Image 1 (cartoon, rainbow, N blue to C red):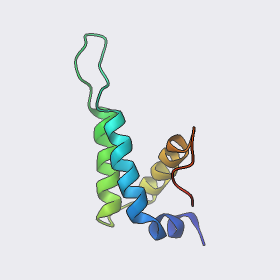
Image 2: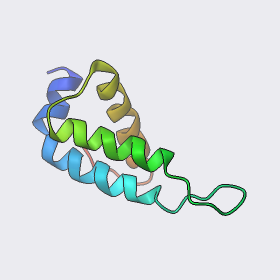
Image 3: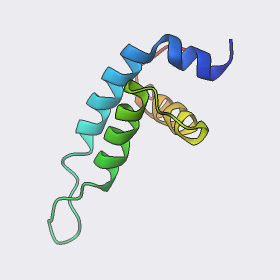
Image 4: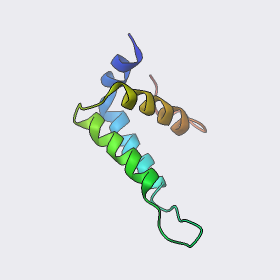
Length: 79
């Protein structure tokens, strides 16, 4: 089973965790104290595309990157 198939097999769990992961970026602020949303938007939109089955090959690469980041301290997503 290739990585895309593994992601698709675990789509629901990955989508849920990606939405949670996006929320961790919702508190970022720039040097002026203004709220930054770029990271949040990127992860949130990635989760939406996965949820709606509209991922590109690049999206799957980004999902894998975020899974590695999410799993850094604890394994939350197993592929």
